[in-house]
Image 1 (spheres, rainbow, N blue to C red):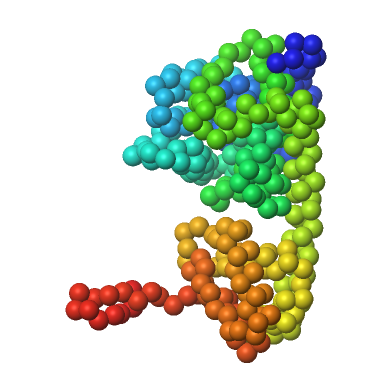
Image 2 (image 1 turned 90 degrees about the horizontal axis):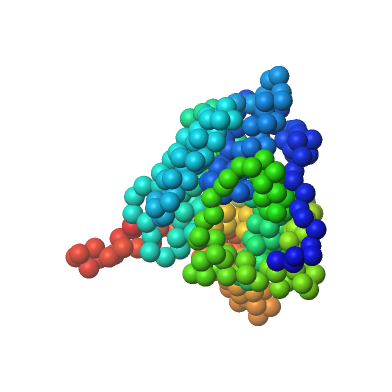
Length: 347
């Protein structure tokens, strides 16, 4: 840490009112509060904001205990005490069942959002609010960059989105973590420190240690956040262009008969990828195809067309083929199964 760096400014009550201004007419909201400084600051600022209103949303603080650390239950009780002191209802939800041996962060994240969405529905809340900060945004972009994400992924986390049918709000994406810590320090409110945030066993933790080095070269959290904003803007523009291309292709042949293969091949490659991604989204696979899989499919299609060969491939429960000059994407037929008698049949 740079000892000569200016101290971070706490988030003021006026700034919080601006951050939360769009929530006034929402009937109820769930605040995701783990007990760490970011989420505790969210609880503190949201409670003060709600108290300043004559009428506003009902707030429910929810802490998810993943059962991965012994201290988690104690931290949940601390959050409950603080929420009670602030006049906010609180619930602790536990991630039960067998935990995976690998991919724990991803599984825990999915379990957390599932439980939060369930809590929101039971409380008649239309959205869940999380305390993701500018630092979290930077780390997310760095993680996705290391995995070769495309423009959509490098756009980072959205301030407003939806998950499991419930709205997801992230009001702090432009706020550095240090400012939330400063907010709690000024209010003399304690918070927990999760040791897994610094555990080198996890990718995000390892990448987090690189942030000070990157910041010294000018690639700080603010720069990553600016990059996310610009790429998100470019992604939105490309999606609008894809909308137009899709409408044009449908007018020239209709959705049922597929797209004119010659017209499709004349489009920009990025638009082709996005059109294929949309067409494959109706597949029966549990997870949509990865960007790299779609790109590989497109390269094979282009090569087949240049060589005048027939083309037919399967991906994500769908079959992509060129039939009578048209690119057709349809559900793949059921796989054949082998009966004990040795005869094949439909599965």
